[in-house]
Length: 249
Image (tube, rainbow, N blue to C red; front, side, top):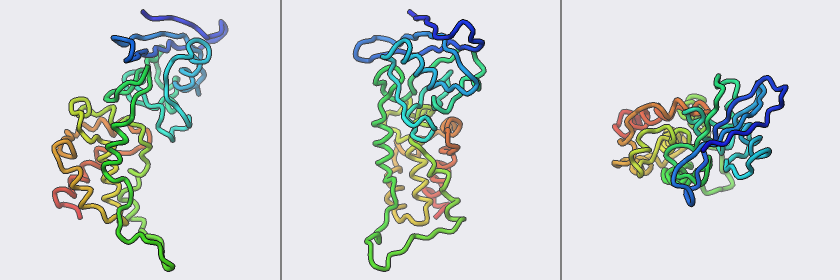
């Protein structure tokens, strides 16, 4: 049953109904929603509204957050049906009197809005997210690995990934294949394969060349639509397929 509470002053001219999904897998059989009337200004973020509820009404609401600057990737959740960062989403931009927040899809729920990231981190580590070289021993004449602007342009947007998990949450294949490596890891595989300083292309391509790897992507494109940093995982996956098929070297 929904709970309705208010922290808005009588004089407040702007407020929204914040619907927070509540679910504890250790105790609850199903998800329920609690509703709160929350005042907001034009700059108020969804995360700030949630923290207002935690401060004034229910300290037990579980939510993960950290930097509040769309940099750490901690506060991903479903906001009005779309994967978003709560700290990067202003209530005024949602154009709705009701804001519903739910945990991200395709991740096991810890409690309420907080989910487990083990699968995301495991698949990220699997694709060797680092420069793979055999000449990294430091010597007295060691130099930087220089790149031209054109070489940098090949992968730089993919280096902006903050591992928030929104792309994996939006991916329909992640929902049907528990072993799928996911758009986040595949985009990062491209990031390193396309880096002229990296020498691990062949081993990295072998890692993703299986039935739960790059060929499992159906190119829905939903991953690219939700990235808060402007990364285009769908494009990275297609470019990565060019390497797999020998069209790129």
